[in-house]
Length: 130
Length: 252
View 1 (spheres, each protein chain N blue to C red):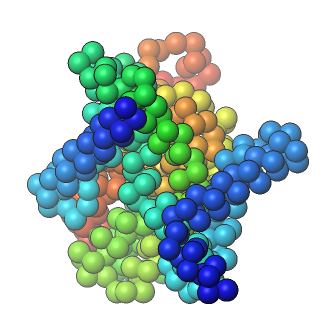
View 2: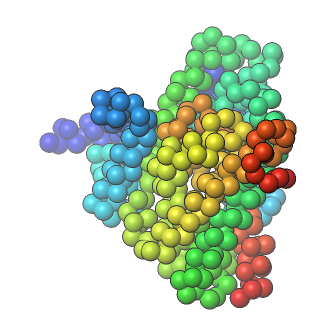
């Protein structure tokens, strides 16, 4: 049944969110620390496990796949409800701070992507990055 | 007129489904016909969404973009945090656990590196614009982390309202730029595999930005980037009002 998959997905999200909220309380932060990430890990583990096969295969699996496929439309709706007007009104300082943070972070992606990768021909033209 | 209003208001989520469906159709049509598929349909859809959000915000004076237009109130629910998180988790279905483990260390390092780098870049910009008190500099720096870390930090250390607003604006600029800019830089920063996607999510951190940016680049990468990005705001809220504020206070 499709609802089994949807229910499993809901269970993962709720459990992840609870853990994230508790983690936040423990750390004394007024935010959810990684709730969604924990929920994703849970779903990955469950969908790879034999015991939960009946909840992730066949019709039940298509209940999860439906929401996975709804992801992009939901992100478009999310974009449409952003406070873009406030970002535009933020003035030059907000613009410069936001743009600079993004540009520097973009530049770091290739550097940090090398962490944990075996050294190979890639580092022929650049210095060693540890 | 009354009849239409009643029906559309009562079924706002359904209106949102239909409206977003239409936006997607138009975007993919434009992508295929006018750009020969060079610009991803979802990238165009996200850009249209942001334009609509600007229009909605200016027209209504509200904070929720196009969702503040009465006819499109359902967008607020469909695009809200609850549905977004639900769909993000669903993308993890079918992800290979060993891919996650392989990039685990790089992912964790990138979360901390991302928070620190964005914070200090934001703080440096605040200083360059003439701020010289530790509270304001920290708050604006935290805003460059994400638009949630900014106000959380600002309120914790007692920043002025205007500064908190500024920090939110900086975070919004970041999030929007990641949404729009990612597909254009993806190739040159090597964003084409699970490992770099996890690093990308950790470095950028804005869940909305990463979610949309990766969707417009390669939907297969979404779960990897989203996984690390969702830890970022929490770590930022942890470090902002504590360690980072102490460091800035020690300097100014």
